[in-house]
Structure formats: structure tokens, C-alpha cells
Image (cartoon, rainbow, N blue to C red; front, side, top):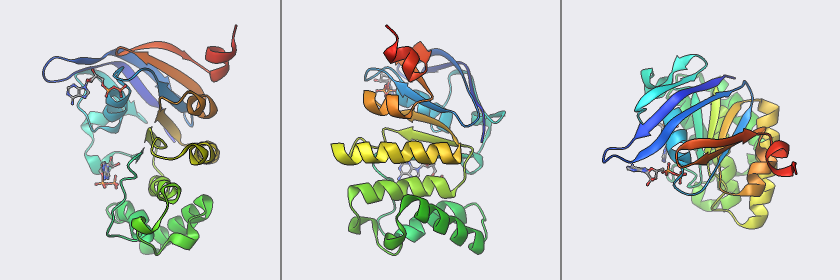
Length: 226
Ligand code: ADP
Ligand code: ADP
């Protein structure tokens, strides 16, 4: 678990687009923040800066006190979940789950233990020896979650993970993601443009507009107050 701190973070892309114009936010241990806002407001840019996948023009992002930009990719204790699943097609589900751990020198026993645990939590035990193409969209999304979970990262970053799923699965998966995030209590940032998803998942919602925070509050504070 970890606190994520953003201090006056700015992003100016080469070419001059000011995507993020001074964002400050403290995310508590175990908290689930949902980032919402219109297309182009900077959600993805902000998430990618927290992930260390995009350079920070000015300001600071720290995870558990460590500045994201000072860390090598392998040292970044975060796991991302994408809509495109980001599974390796030539590997089995088990190998996909093990991959990120092997890169981090985790022992064989520990890898097996974590895969068993994650597979049970996500109900993907029957599919461990299959390839991603032999799975449904919902099953693949679970494997993508599994890849994040087995790492036991300090933070989860979700980038519209459910947007490729049909409506019924989206509802089912958002309930499962909420349950898992609560039970693991892993600090999380979740980007979506789906308002129901945002309300269901968020401890606090952050509304971005044109690169700035417009509102921050619990779903009740933002949606249910007169
Ligand atoms: P959102 O995720 O909310 O849709 P983005 O973070 O993708 O917003 O984009 C924020 C702004 O930054 C937009 O104006 C977008 O066009 C611009 N932008 C995003 N990525 C790049 C890039 N690689 N180079 C230049 N401009 C970019
Ligand atoms: P790990 O999965 O152990 O983090 P990788 O080298 O596979 O190590 O990934 C490095 C970074 O790229 C991580 O932030 C990861 O979430 C992200 N990533 C991994 N696979 C993909 C993919 N297929 N597409 C986009 N990003 C990915």
C-alpha cells in the first residue's frame, strides 16, 4: 500500500499542448480515486505520468515517498490494467501471470503460490493452461487483472479497463474490481468516462477539465447533493 502525492504537476507536450496545468492531489493508503472528465481533459496523460510512462514537465509525483521519475521501470512498484488487456498472445494464462514476477526475481514457489491465489480470487483457475485467444473478453480482462494482482504492487492504475466489454460484463466486472480493490486495499487510480462505473468504484472522484481539477469529492458529495 502507498500514498500517491501529486504536487503542482504540469505537462506540456512537445509542440506546446498544455495537457496538465498544475494538478495537486493527495491519495491516501488504500484509496480508490476515479478520474473523470471530458475527452481530451488530460486523464490519460495524468495516469501515464503517475505510471512513469510519460515525463513530468514540472512538479512532482511520489509513490510511497519515492519520486516516480527517479525510478527505473523495473523499480516502479505499480501495475497498470488496460482495455486492450496487454496479454502476451503466445503465452498461456499461467505464463502471462508469471511473466512480470520472473522479471523481478521472485522464487518459483512464491510465483506458484501467488498465481493460485489470484486465479482463485478471479475464478480463472480452469483457464490457466489456455492461450489468451481461447478466452472470452471477460476472461481476458480477468487475466489482465490477475497480472496486476500477482505483482502485489503499491498501486494499481486502471486506464478504462472495461471499455471493450459488453454492457452486462462491464457491470459484472466493475463490481468485481471494486470487491478486489477493497479486499486488497491497494491504492488505485481508475480512469473512465462511464459515470456509473465512476460512482460505483470511487472512494473519491476527481473531475478534470482542460488540464485542471474542477471538483474533488465522494460520489455522494458530487452527485447526490441537491
Ligand atoms: P483524455 O485521456 O482525458 O482524453 P489526454 O491525456 O489523452 O486526455 O489528452 C490531453 C491533451 O493532450 C489533449 O489535448 C491531447 O490532444 C493532448 N495529447 C495527448 N497525448 C499527446 C501527445 N503524445 N503529444 C501531444 N499532445 C498530446
Ligand atoms: P511488467 O509487466 O512486469 O511491469 P513490462 O516490461 O511487461 O513489465 O512492462 C513495462 C511497463 O509497460 C509496465 O508499466 C506495464 O504495465 C506496461 N505494459 C506491459 N505490457 C504492455 C503492453 N502490451 N502494452 C502497453 N503497456 C504495457
